[in-house]
Amino acid sequence: MTLYSYCLRYDEGAAPNPYWGVCTLVICKPAIRRVAKIGDWIVGIGSKNSPIGDISTSVVYAMQVTRKLSMRDYYNYCQSNLPGKIPDWSNSDFRRKVGDCIYDFVSPGDPLVEPCVHKENNRATDLGGKNALLSDHFYYFGDNPICLRSDFLPMIHPHQGHKSRTNEQYVEEFASWLEKSQYAPNSLLGEPQLKKEIISMDSKKCRDLCSKRDEEENRQDSIC
Image (cartoon, rainbow, N blue to C red; front, side):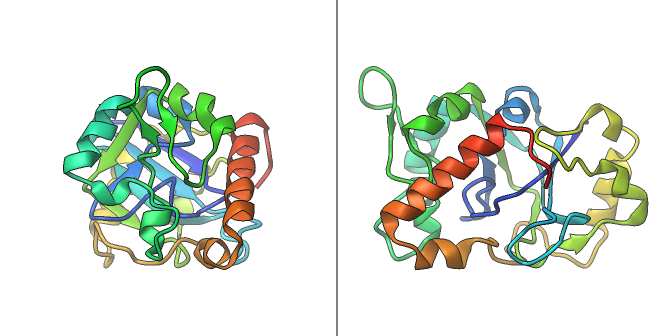
């Protein structure tokens, strides 16, 4: 069992996507998605410059991978099992706006990018991750993040990328800490930190901004 930890700079509800009873990581973080296995934990730790303040020592979400699908198989799976994950950018339901099943594999040739928080310039990163990671055992705190226990602080990775090998000593204790906590798994214990921003912005401007931020996040080493 491996624990991957990283700084979640932009918690917009799409990566991770905690809706419809399944937390999914399908876009962004391609390096993790390529190698994570069923049973592994993925932990998003907050940013010093988040819209709710300095949460750089707090957990925004944690998910144990319980299913792993190729991007094509995820598209097919969502058609019948998780239709809410298919983005509908014009929908008034925020959950539909930030759907992460954004690549349509039905058409011949390269999959089409559905209107969503990403655009064509995010294709290489998204599809480069190869896999969609699903969890029915997760904790999503969003704008109500919880402080890391002091002995877990070495898990923090404030730069672009992630930690894994050095987390080996924490994985079982971290999982136990969450599972024995007062927090209910598989439910929203907060809202995405950028939800209000996305709702309030002009549609085109919002898509452009989200796409650009995620592209830069995956390309540059940025201090959170």
